[in-house]
Length: 282
Image (cartoon, rainbow, N blue to C red):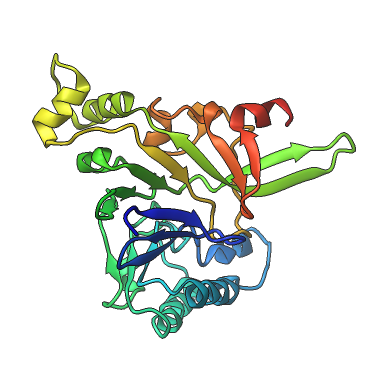
């Protein structure tokens, strides 16, 4: 395999990255323990952690990756750790590591104090993201924070955080809600300009040249993939109903991503059209 291959694993909310000698499975937004928050509001549902664990183990056995990367929001409660999380999350990793030993987590905004719940063999990485890949680079970040400047030089940018869904209302008033994958193109110039402004780097030269001068990064117009939540019970943001400025995270609010022109796909791979088209038929 000369090039890197990035593909969803239908019908799951998982992404498989295949290289010459390595296969990496990526999932995001498990929100283990969200039932505790619902219980405090008087809504009682069974723990979803065993169901999520069973689904993930099935995917690991089917795809046989060398490593698993969890792209943020493994746990749910912020800032505290609930009794549910103390009880279930260590057991969750104990079961996973019987199938796969190499597990890494890029923390999301719900992952405070995560190191207290995970075994030492699980690697907790920087919330500013990482890059994987040999011939082609893939930047991975949860999406609630700015990425490290080096990631703007990657060919692909994979984010989570928004739990993208498509919402439709039929004439009979039935509401249809489906989880989706979102594919877009990131304008490197606008992305660089926004990141430089955030980091306080000033200069009168072109932002692309300034990124090269300051961080030695060759900025690219990245192919962006927005991941659906691995926990389908938790819900998501209706991408075709929300204005772009209401979407979550600095990357999508930077103006570098034209969400209207982005493509939407169901979990089984069905192409729904552009977000602009879905807004018209909502």
